[in-house]
Amino acid sequence: MLIRYVRMTFREDKIEEFLKIFNDSKHKIKAMNGCQHLELMHDINHPTIFMTHSHWNSEIDLNNYRDSELFKITWAKTKAIFADKPIAFSVESLIVV
Image (cartoon, rainbow, N blue to C red; front, side):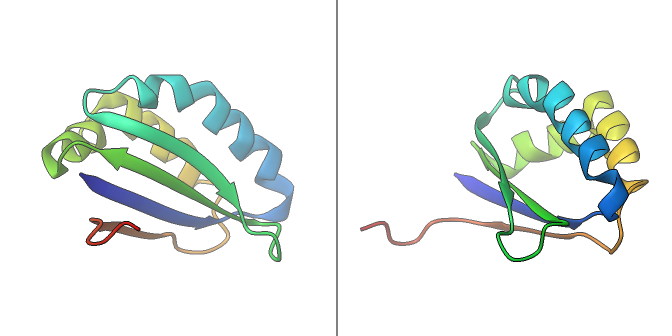
């Protein structure tokens, strides 16, 4: 399983717009083939920083999502309201206790 994190910093006046974008697309993203988990997190000390946390069956499934029209449309709207460059990375679990 691939675990994906995307850390995003938004302009303060665009937070509500981002939340609408996320809420409008979250069920469609979760319905993508291979998506097992989707979560939006908020930095408790920095109100303009959010992070998505998703689980994918494989890198192929993640890339299929990233190549989809849903991603292209959602990402275009999202990146237009960034205050800083996003940080994205994928990991896999090695040890779970």
